[in-house]
Length: 255
Image (spheres, rainbow, N blue to C red):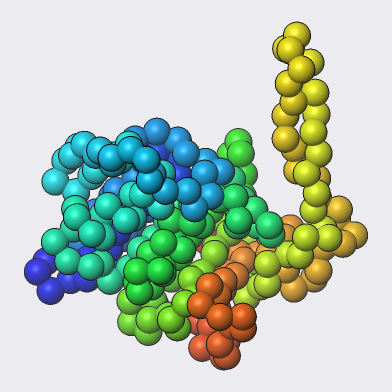
């Protein structure tokens, strides 16, 4: 496999997540896959990095490493120390739960892919939009097909892709925009099980304010949402190339 591309797989659900295993297995047909991820779940850790303590990691196998740190830490450590050379692709996921709209700013899954992009590596994050029912195999299969396109064509500098797959994917693939802030708000709900003054942070989505071309709208219609996110400038480059990709990507598997 010496001539095959090297692929870094990571997440924020932890090194033992089923989604990480499914993703690694599917991508292994494309190249040499190495998993470097937090030793435990670090959901909603955003792009935090460890500045005031040394990073530790454990080698769990020839291609699996558990990092005592955040998702962004994992990519930094992998690219600058663990891997013998810079990978050709970084894939973060498969995340349990959606990363839509403003949640990209909180997501450790998305931030790990952003960190790959900041290192000049084509990167994407992929999530399944459910908290209860997970069918990782079709999502991993789709990720492998998208990865093959990216390995062949590349991505523009400063752009990564945020992919969200609805549970029971039933329609096609849509190129989308990140849903704007007006469609979503955070609320505090008192923790009735606790005697102390404590609260849960909850998300509320206002359906009527969801733009039709947004990630939220696409997932609700049963489509996979692919949202390009730009971090090296104010404007995204022309997206004709991505429109062609979307048209070439597969339809849902037969029931």
